[in-house]
Length: 115
Image (cartoon, rainbow, N blue to C red):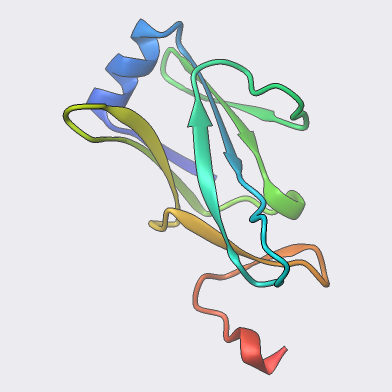
């Protein structure tokens, strides 16, 4: 997995202790194939485990891959001016499509109707 952290995001995470956790939030809907948005936190999330460490310079990035699949490219950046927050992007997207029947991550361009 290739990791890229923007200068602004790196500065923000360093000011919060130098650790960032990234995970895909399971959608709370009844249908499979719903997008799971990536969440970030500068403190370990309560009740979640299975994070793998990845380092970018002096930052420790802890990534929890949905269904064991990792992106080719994970981008960490900042968003918002009034309420700045760190965001993560999976191969350029803020979400991951999960096929709950097969419990595996699907590429964002997959046609879910053909499954």
